[in-house]
Image 1 (cartoon, rainbow, N blue to C red):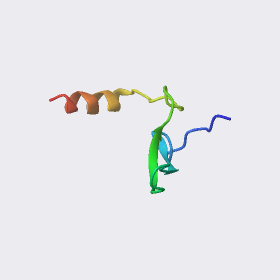
Image 2: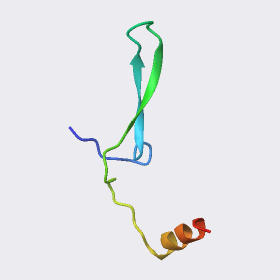
Image 3: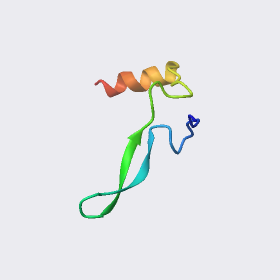
Image 4: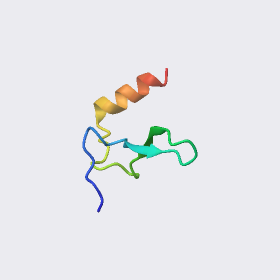
Length: 55
């Protein structure tokens, strides 16, 4: 089942992991598949912000 992306997990999510060798618990970041859903909206404001970031 594919989860629908929300603001909390649009980029991905952290899943608990356990190391097999020493049993240490940690979290691994698992990115969401591309392209994102909903798609990124490149309106005039977004294009302007991206253009300013190039300077």
